[in-house]
Structures are given as structure tokens and as C-alpha cells.
Length: 516
Image (cartoon, rainbow, N blue to C red):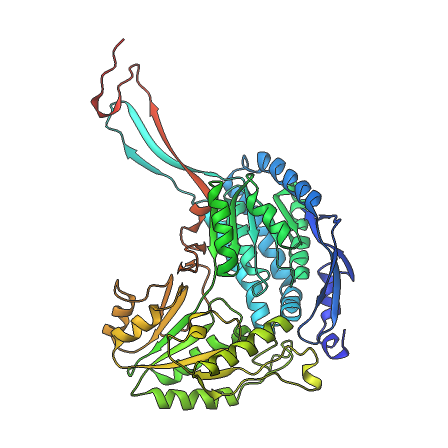
């Protein structure tokens, strides 16, 4: 590890989180074992090897699943408020470890330290949300048409919930799913991204403390680091009641199909191609801030990153010029240094995709307002630092129709708002969207049935930075899944209708007679 990054206390944080130079990537409640190949986790910050992780194989997977199924038998019978107490304690542990875990997220993934700490705060917030929810898993009662009968609906836990998460949010998305799964009485098996395995091991170490202190079954929380073969096992396992998958649309289509074929349940959080509409009635100061953060935050590697700006022609030139000036003020560098706005892309593959996308945009006729490129020099040793760039395009360009996981922002003009909304909706993805306007009629049209077709639609805030209180997810090729807040807990439970006859006779529904 470079001295520069060690100055930020990374070595100390790794130690506090239980991360060593050699780690095993399969855990059942904190008991580690692994018999697969060894992978290495390099930081995109400085290109240095952080640690090695031994992955799991098929036998390790089965051991994890057997432990989970056995733990479920006990865990489902524990009252939900008691399960909520475990989540409360987990949230408190996260508060104690927030600085250390936030640094690790920043160092292993490459997002800014503020965003790394913010991601851990999301974990804490979902724990708080889930604790309150643990006393509110309400069913319904209804009147029966038959005298002396009572009808009601209730919710029961599903069983084993499989979680497959992506590198860009290496801890928060797991926590979204896990906190709700646990208060619902489910147990979890997590396959984290191979690009950020140390973040997953750190989380597993933290929850292991809670399980041990409460003498709870280890199989409540399982984790296995591995390649796509482990993911295939999890997706195709009939004992996995629900698969929550975060990743690309291409892989999500395979996951959804395979889970559906065995009549399992899935939550799919897939691609985003998010737009902000800036009207002539927008507060442009606010619009620039929202657009820039949405486009360059996490180096454009959020599923909610702003990819497209659809700007009313009367303010187009002003917005374009102000954006170019703002981009000129961005500080790119070590994400552990809070003075920097933008960190690196996750790896060299991401850099190649970024460069290829720029060339494709130019080939289709795109004109770059702010040029891109790879940064070189002593502050960019990893080769993963790139320049956020801006291009003028048409919405129908093939490259614009795709999600590019990099800081490339596309600008386009519109004349009337109906056209702008149509342009925004005219992409395969449907995750997040926003409009910047001080006109009530414009805002309400955007939120109406004739407005945004995305799962998230915002007014006067950007496309990224969702709160855990609302359901998170999107439509179309984004997958249709929902995670986090609202009544999303119902995804993690099975619904059951109950009828109780407390009379001495057996009347049938719909007035049917069946006398013997």
C-alpha cells in the first residue's frame, strides 16, 4: 500500500474491520472457510494490492445453504420485534464502525470518502427503518359473506433470500435487502461483487458479532465470494425463495428468466439511463449543481447517475456554458482526500468501456463540449482516473440508448415539454428521472400519467441520492423490482388468506348447497 493512502489510516481501518492480507471468502455467521481459487483485490485509488481472498466452490456453497435452511427453522419462530432487536444492534455496530467501513468502501471501490461514509449511513438508516417496521408487519381483516366466519390475511417469511450485489454500492444494497429480510423472518445468503470482496467480509464480521452476542444461529447471515458459477447456483437453487439481483440488464434478463422457470421470486435492479429535464422556468444555479453531482458522483458509476440532460432551447447555451465552467473546476484524485470531487473508475475494463463509448459517440456525430481522456501522472498511478466529459448528441444515437457506467454526460435540446418527456422516456431503461422547474404545471405534468415512465421521478432534485424511506427501483429494462422503504417488505414475505369458522355448521361460499 502506498504511503500516501496509508496516511489516511487505511491500514488501521482494515485491522479494525478484521481484514488481513489473506482472507477466506465464505462465511456462515462469521465462521470462515473456502476451497476455491484465490483472487486479489486491488484499489483503483493507487493500484496497490489490498488483500487476497480465497473464493468458495460448489461444496462451500452447499454448506452455506444447509446452514441457512437450518437457521431458518428457528429464526422464523422468533417474534418479529425480537428480530428487529438484532437489526437495531447491527445498526449500532455500524455506527461504531462507520469511519472504518466508509474508508474501506472508498479505497476498495474508488468512490469519494464522503460517498463511502454516506453509503454506510444508508446502512444505518435502513436498520432504523427496519427496526420500526418490525412491529408493523400488518395484515388485513375483512368481513365474510358466511355467518360465524372471520377472514383475514397475514404475511409469513419466505425462507432463504439470495442477494447478488454490484461493486458500485458494495455494502448498502446488501443492507437494504438484509435488514428487511431479517425482520421478516428470512435468512440471507450473499454473493457480493468479486471486485469489492473485502467490503463484504467486513460486513460479515460486523454482523457476526451481533449473532454471537445474541446466541443466534450462524446461518442467519451467509456470504460466499465467487464467480458467476456461484451466482448460477444461487439463482437456480429451488431452496432460494427470493433472488435480489443488482447488475446489468443483460445478466438480469438471465436471472429473471431462470428464477421464473422454477416459480421463484425475484427483485431485479438493473440498468439506468437517467435524464434531467431543464425547463426555461428552472432555477439554473440549482440545476447545475444537481446535474454535475448526478453525472460525476461515484465517477458516473451509479445506476441513478445522470446520463442525459434534456434542455429547453431558450436556456440551452447558458446551461451548456455553465456546465463546461463547472467541469473545469472539478478536482479529480484520491477519493480519500475530501478536497477531491471525483475518484477513479473501478478498474481498467471500466476505463476501456469509457474510451470506447467516447469513440462511438464521436462516430455517430456527437460533439464534445468538454473532452474526455485518461489522466496520467504520479497522482493517477492506477490508470483508472478519467476526465468527466460532456457531449452534444441526439437522443436516438445508439450509444445514448445504452447505459455507460462512466462520467459521460449527453446534452440535447427540446422545444416543448411534451417533446422533452417523450425524449426522456424514449430509452429502454426506466429507473430515475428529474425535472428542474419552478412552474407548478410543468412539475405536475412530469409527475402525471402522461409524464415520466420511471420508477423514480423527482422535481428540483437530481436523479441520484435516493432516500431509504421510499421504494427504490425502476420499470422497463430496469427490471421492475423495488427495494428499501415504503411497503417493500411485502416482497420478502408470502401472503396467506385465512378463514375461520367458529360455528357448528359448514355453510359454503356463494350460497352453494351440499347436503349429505
